Image (tube, rainbow, N blue to C red; front, side):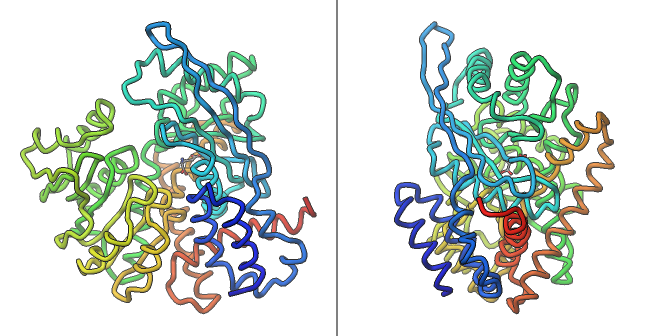
Length: 449
Ligand code: GLU
């Protein structure tokens, strides 16, 4: 191990022992970039890596809101402006009960390298709240979002920091957040948020972008293996926005999602989620984000309660698309034993580090990392920013074509970076290296701070 990388990791482990998800992502990224640091001894003198793991700015704020019965509630909000070396801070907001600084920081750190990989000028950021959206009325969500934006609006802007959605934050929340921003600022600066509704500056294809991008990336991997997507059966986890985009694009390209899951268990639909079933996914998600069993009842397919589909053999590709640390060592062993060749991460950090390294060490499995595979979402967010600053609207075909090209590029630069350092077809290391190099260079060229 490179001594400088080692010392930075020791520092992070000690300082952030109470933020295990953050330590996990730093270990994952920095274990890949060793050969780059070996080649650039000047990084140590500039203490580049310790600077990279310290957010440029991170703040917390109070979010007070009143429920429909007149009861007042107090939540915590955060925004982490992690790294702005290559563009305005960019990254989503997560509203979920379990959110705390360790979650925001892990997501923000991942975002730096993911955003760099898109090839577009966006820095890394993330934010959110420990607000639990489950069971809240529209009016409650609106009041919460308005209060959240009252605390945040001074510190964001189209050239400063551009939040978007993440878990618990979709089109509805972005609408309320933008409305409040506009009201407070008195300007129509819609480039301040992405994932907006189309009527006020949202981009075509943004809702589908993460899922579509993931399937385009998968196609590149298949191409590399002289294989095609036709007829492929996909096992995914989750049934949110990202899963929906995968289902839609897979069906369009002649593949099919035959397994998906929710917190309550998994669904096996051997015919695949196609046609009207894809629309039902959206409906089911909006009604109940905690249970997917109703799909089995409606379409007469199998539901297995309290289990995940990791280890099933009658699929060709695994795509964990739900949340962090979804695949731990026991699931990784089952996945390896299933004989399935493609393990394509989609959710942010869906695999624990030991499980990821185990899967990477299996010769018969190709592993692709989420920061590359899901980058199409934020990539199209950057295209939304471009449209907003141009005061233009691009067609769905134009956005989709750019997204497709972006995913081809991300796969190519990752494969090339791994190749350059003699690592073979290692998409995990390649993505980390390619994402890191650009940010490192920008930081070195901008001076010491
Ligand atoms: N939350 C998404 C992500 O993890 C999207 C962020 C964005 O569009 O800014 O990349």
